[in-house]
Image 1: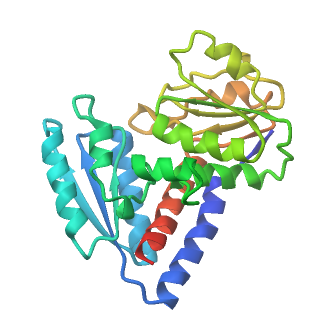
Image 2: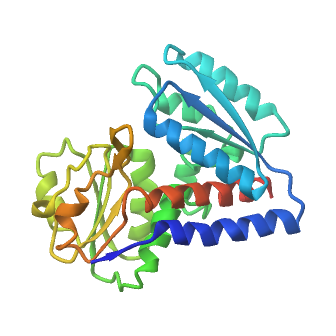
Image 3: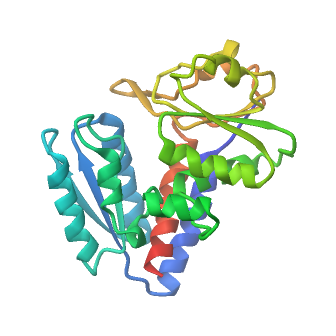
Amino acid sequence: MEIIDGKQIATEITEKVADEIKANKLQIGLAVILIGNDSASELYVKLKKKACIKVGIDFHLYRFPDNTNTDEVIEAIKFLNEDRDINAILVQLPLPKELDTKKIIAAIDPKKDVDGFHPINIQKYINGEIDFLPGLNEGINILLASTKQDLTNKKICILANSDEFAEPLEKYFTNQGLNTKHIHLTDPDWTDRVKEADILITAVGKALLITKDNIKEDAIIIDVGTNRLTKNTIVGDVDFESVCDKCSYITPVPGGVGPMTIAMLLKNSVRLAR
């Protein structure tokens, strides 16, 4: 088993972004909306702020309490849509269950949608009208490419709750001629589908859900899950210790997809500013 070092790959991308911003004297403003007190979201926002400061992106945090309603968030987004100093807008997910996530994402100006989750941008990508792959998905693609494995004839399974995340990624791999399926935990046969996968991408937010009994021999695993077990312990959707002797490549949590997500955020903020 080999560990896919997302942290190292992300560092290389971040350094290139910093050089580009400095060389072209770019002025970039990123607005991040954080709602509630989800510990994983708090951590990610903190890391995103640190990364932005490091490369020279102006970071603006808009924090809302748990009892915020959907209309209040949309009003803030409308303000940011009109703010000329803001090039990129990000709503930190997941949102509290009481909020309408799809409606909030749809309120973002598609030209400032740094995550690439706006329905217009997703549809344009699926239709082949733009090549702006959502940052999280592009990061996953880069992590897979780093293994230098031939993916021809490989079965890819995306186990995810979010269609906004899964659909563009499924489209991307399907366009490469790869057999790709997106499934949910609510699918009665999800365990069978996962066990058939040569490449498993999981993003369901269920700590240690996937064990060695759930995966195929020599599978490549991309673990997007971020789950806090204790104050100082964060794990993925995959039980790392259980699967490490059975899989061929795996992203650790932390240190895998997380750093790549942040690196892609910086890269896409530059794209939008340009």
